[in-house]
Length: 266
Image (cartoon, rainbow, N blue to C red; front, side, top):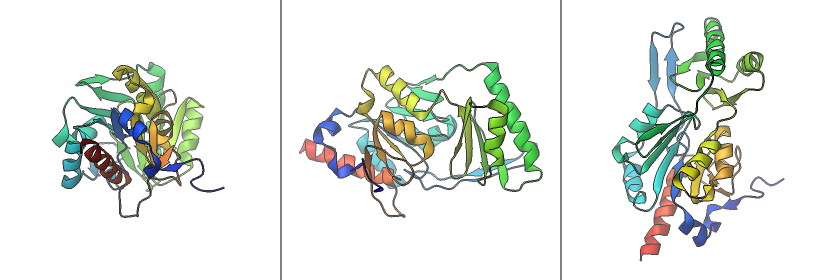
């Protein structure tokens, strides 16, 4: 079975599809910034060290230009404060943030989020406490990234954590590998659900939102929006971007869109 079967190179997208776009939503890690987060937390949670990447200045300038043609969205498993700091130089009411795998949306300078029962937060608390007990014996577990609606543990890929989630919550929660650890959250919410909600809030069709991604938590978002995968080996979409290991697919997509809009204005 061919790797790119049922997918098209982005160069095959039609002018009609591009002209219909109202929003482009970028995943973050591995799409517009390099992957790789350093995180270390002590067992009682009183000390936390975290280091991640920022957007390059040349890319920020390109985003400023792209914002003249489209609303810009940024969708990530990361927390809302990190997303805000990441795009602070272009931040205004034309920028949309969707954090914690779709659980928090910043739209028109307002925060939108689902309402969960106490049982859900209790399950996350119980899972976290059990993982903290594991940290004392397992150095492969580095700590927790601060989140409100989901639980993110930074660690090596170890079966004990998905098994623990299954034991505590059955099939009610997802446990997704992120390359740096596990995201644990409610199966009823995803990046894709957040994109569908966003389309409704903006009174547009989901396919008028171009979505990008490279990992398992992007799957639904790529299916619901006008999906562009930058890692077709891991996650499928209608379109894919080919790039070299040292290149970032989201940055190449920005160049592609700027070239299109530049030609349309000539």
